[in-house]
Length: 468
Image 1 (cartoon, rainbow, N blue to C red):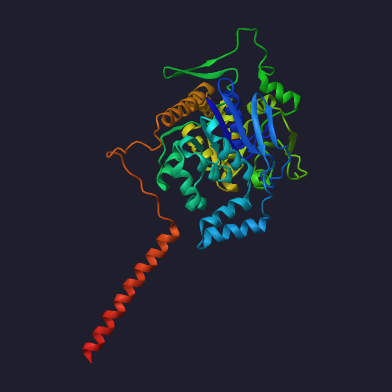
Image 2 (cartoon, rainbow, N blue to C red):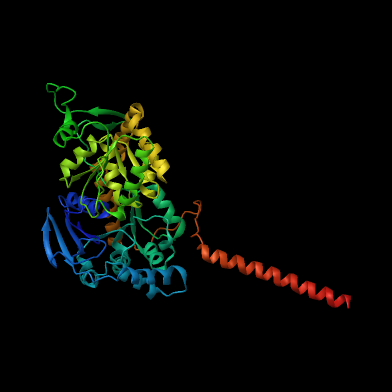
């Protein structure tokens, strides 16, 4: 099949978020299919500055076509556009203006889809809350699969996303909760859908699921090393002189990813009697305090990053959204429990389902959860085993890739048969109506009360006339 992945950013330097997930899936499907990636020339999601050259290139076996991104608005322009669409009456054009100001806005990418969409069997769009998907799916909705990456928020009330979700022919969901959220808000007309997520490379000693049983699969027989030298995790600790208990943040060190809040909560944890060191590894966007308990470990290659996750006592994920979702699954795959920001709903859902991590909503919960995880060895071991089993059961690469191939093949078959409408709904299934926006419910409620009060006043005036 000829597959096109459409994503706002793409590159080997993007080590987290949906862009990283897109690259991992595209590279693996490129072994058996013709895969192209359509993306912008930008690398930074805050400025959307064009840093890559326009045109086609090859990256790890995948053809990447880049298109220039228009310069987004300054923060004040983005706020004005957001206020207009979230707090006042507006038209669809105002919503498109918000997407343009937010970025990335790439007319060239959409024009390429309009000219060349016939050469692709399936179009796969990552992240619904960007113009690349909102405008791209319009071109050929009958061959479009959407990976939504959404949380419950005001954006879901916008008409541009109502059109997007009601027109895409296929969906690859991250979790069942995401599917239920979107299904409760929109009338989906999809032909194919499945809960897919992203695959994870399991390390040596992975958990193998076989007929409902799971077991550890180790490397070939060899003479065991002493416990303090055994394994890649201990080797990583020795190389980086990390001894004792330490908590790892292995994503981008950025205020937008919750790192300022993490440092503040970590100081509260220390004042509350905590003794674990905080280690941050990744691209540093913000300054770090001069604190003996905080250590910056630099940027690590992929293999070394996997060893760091296994070496850590706990992996903390401070991002308030789903940018660190892949990192959470990678940590669970090596048996390290995670501590997650409670606002990151998709990541919290994985914690609940796997029973392999905790989450926090404020500094007090952060301190108590971190002390529990670092001090209770038995609990940490149980969470680690749960995490390994969960990832092995649901997120092995063969499982994930087979789901993508099945979705694409079913969608291509529907297009070949000329079926671009979903099957007739089963009358026995519960139909979930889109939830009415809260503002409309308030207005309708006020109108009801106004009518009631007007009726009371009319009756009172009538009684007064009768007395006279």
